[in-house]
Image 1 (cartoon, rainbow, N blue to C red):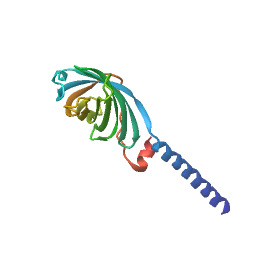
Image 2 (image 1 turned 120 degrees about the horizontal axis):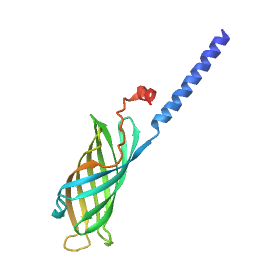
Image 3 (image 1 turned 180 degrees about the vertical axis):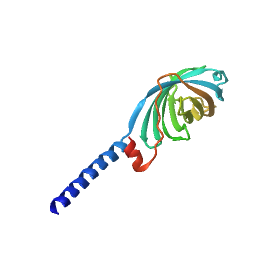
Image 4 (image 1 turned 90 degrees about the vertical axis):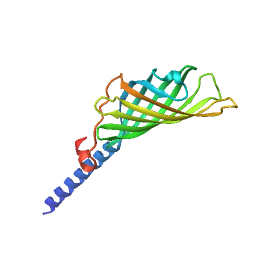
Length: 180
């Protein structure tokens, strides 16, 4: 009887140890990869010359767990006035085959110490190919006294040009832990 209880206790300890390691593994963010997109600008309210231009966006996607992802990237923002590097950071969820993300942006215009832009982008990317759409609202701080702040709106289409990053739909709870 004592041996059966000891074997049962040992099995419970082993099982609970395996379960804890699975929980830790599933809770650890996993960098999925880096890719690039072409952003074809369909509308930009602050610079009419931007419509029809293509910008290049580079970013990495990290799976945080279940259906939650983070994104970090950069985009050289080329306007009729010049080029500046935009830094992007945000996150989102995989819902019905689409990665829907809210991404913050910040940029200091090259050569202009007081000129800055900050805003929020809304990405909708198809899970199957990572192509999709983008909209953005921004506030620009320009160093001119007559127009110190400007509000902008940008819309466009994203076409993935770099490697595919596979996104998985989480199933939640213990079943997710068993599958991963």
